[in-house]
Image 1 (cartoon, rainbow, N blue to C red):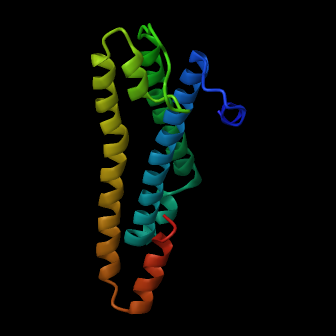
Image 2 (cartoon, helix red, strand yellow):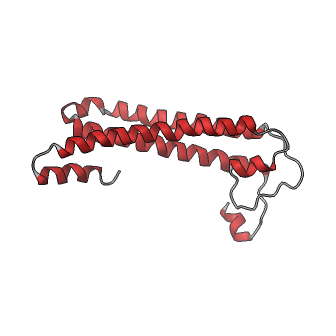
Image 3 (tube, rainbow, N blue to C red):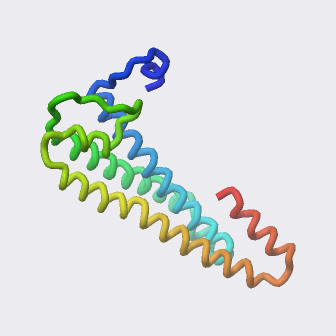
Length: 164
């Protein structure tokens, strides 16, 4: 992609477009699920500190990372395979340097209804589930921190969540 930007080429081959699409969905999905795992980690550290070391062992951490990658991979593969089944005709030019699903839907000669439904449904799961879990986790963390009597204790508890 950088080569195309620097060389002022305005065309991206179909295979490169699918590759770009796959890696975008893969990395965004991993990011969402890893942020959810980090929120769970902070929830355990602050709300249940006595059980933290057993509940967040290295084995559990590895499982969380593996599940994050597996879910993101299945999402990326689903979208890439679904878009590769579409038929394209006419001027296949996208006025962007990046291939994304909505732009590819506009170029398709075949029906994109299933793809759009898939994008909405899977997108809701991939974004909605982590968002709900993160919000739930931080509501519990905030409630636990606000129950701490000393301001120094509250500051220390909130500072552990600052980077997340």
